[in-house]
Length: 317
Image (cartoon, rainbow, N blue to C red; front, side, top):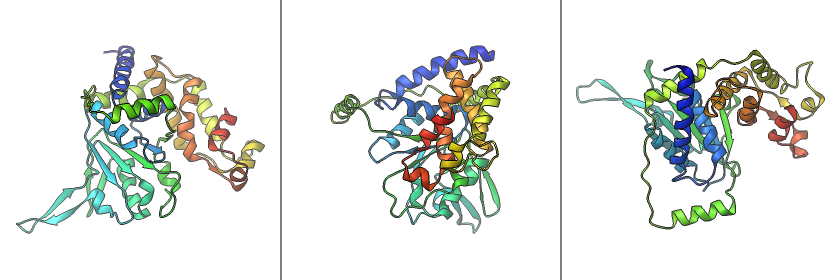
């Protein structure tokens, strides 16, 4: 099958996938789009939202429709790295045997990831970047495809451990979940207070998802689109001579090179699911908010004046 035909097929399957997810999840179309884009590109996503916005249900539903294994890890202050990765135990024959932890799954929901200490947060780093874990000097490969979808409560900060910038940078998207509209909330209440149940169909296989990831990487990108993505990321860095007064005024640190890579990859996937065979600048802008939001560090002046990351990113467009 040619890449053009494969993209046409992806458009149809993407729409069918969203219809299947909509059987369970009401609204949140932009959030679902960004999660799916991160899956199509092999990236990870951080979901930021208050409790009760169906983050866990959303991830579980998506994993079912993609035909992937799903495990949820509840991050707590007493969680240890071995609780996630697994550990070696002595069997009956006095030989060490490795017992796999919950991280050995296709989709990991790291629930309230900022509730656990840095030592346990760091246990995810190798898995997210290398798709492997090292236990007692032995490397264990994770089964592909592999995604970490983490959640974070933006309000309750007592007893939390903010994610270090190095780990935040591992997430392709930081996705903000907002409250549903009144019409959507009425629909949610009606659906969840009755006896209706829904049977979800798996529309992808693990192999098909890996093929989609390879397809996305093969999509050609015009030089002007790459140039725009790199310049957009470059414009967030206040320590450069070329930085604007606006950026110098409100930003302490800008985004790194991984942001440029993710912008191009995200633009490719966004173009593909919208039936385009090559991305343009509008595709870069469509994914820029989720990719840059968590990579920009505001200063005290921005905090005092109520300037958000979104405001800064829109100004950079």
